[in-house]
Length: 161
Image (cartoon, rainbow, N blue to C red):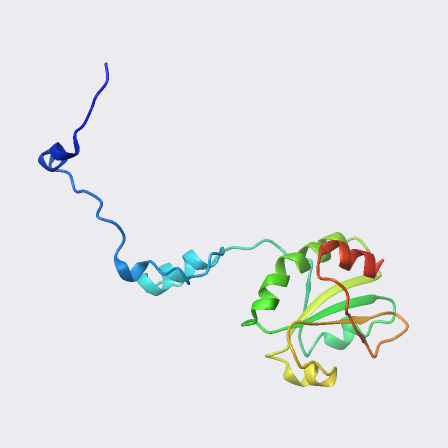
């Protein structure tokens, strides 16, 4: 036995019908990332929802730990100087996380990043003028050198190796 429901009879069932999303709620320019739903809920609901993230293997640099991490003469360190608002930086982030994961067991390799917008003095010291800027600080050259290679996982791995 099959049940058929005629659309004309739906009104008589006494159920509320879905009339679509309100116009102001749909915005094709809204980002499609893991944070977007939380941002929407926070904006519309007046809440402070946060997305839980797993541990990262990227060392987050600050003014306090920069010299200790980057200038360590026992490690080769790749540093990303980024700005939180930068689209290129946001695109690089998941790849950079994979690079850090690939080298997490290598004690003589460090993968780090610095919010260059927040720590402008450090960024200026290393001639960072755009985002994202990648600098490599090998064991034998702690002045740092510009990374000009590709930005895929394989490119980074080949360069560091």
